[in-house]
Image (cartoon, rainbow, N blue to C red):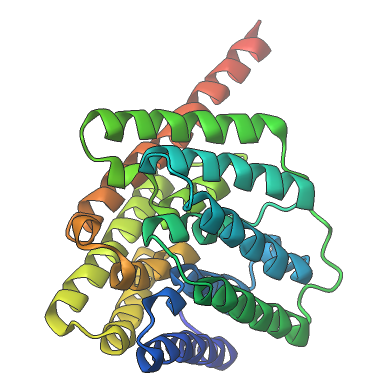
Length: 303
């Protein structure tokens, strides 16, 4: 994919915005200010200008901020990690239904406080600040004007998402790896592609490689450098190159290098494998469902 000067400028601005966040966290020595999904939101809204994400700018602030509060509060509950993940996912779906929003990154901001065990209000304040700035950026760009409001979140989609997530949690819990219950970038992509009318095996494979590859890049670079700022500075351009090679636009992939910075040690080293396995399971489920749906439709038409 060749980039125009305007697209290149948007990439540089978006990259600088993410670096500002990581620099702030570095100066304050506060890992809870590093918000991986801000990298994905910045890419999707400022660079890719994803119509589904930018059509209602106010919800760029309301949805991620609301789910972050949900995750932060659920994390205080005295229940197991997988139970926290499932409860948070259900509450996120309810909030998105109330807001009439299908903003997928809201899942990541909701799960993050559970994954990193956020305990300081600096996490919530950082979410408020950076999502407000992104909303302001979308308002300034003005590409949201004239876009349709979009379709509301369907109950059938909520049910399908919840059941698939429940199955995954049961599998990883039974296998003794409950930490794999929630991998935000994968769930974001799953939520998005499950709303697509068609989803091919070829595209699913590209998405799995992109997500697993981005996670691997984040972990390897951080192992070599052990610096929040340097890891971000080097890994994000590498993810960009990976996506260019695969010829896909996948904002969620940009969240993985930052996720590697804030994960507990028990999850950090398993992140690449966890990303590959989770992406294969969730995206493979969508492919199988779409193929069964297509065959059923053909059968009905023949009858």
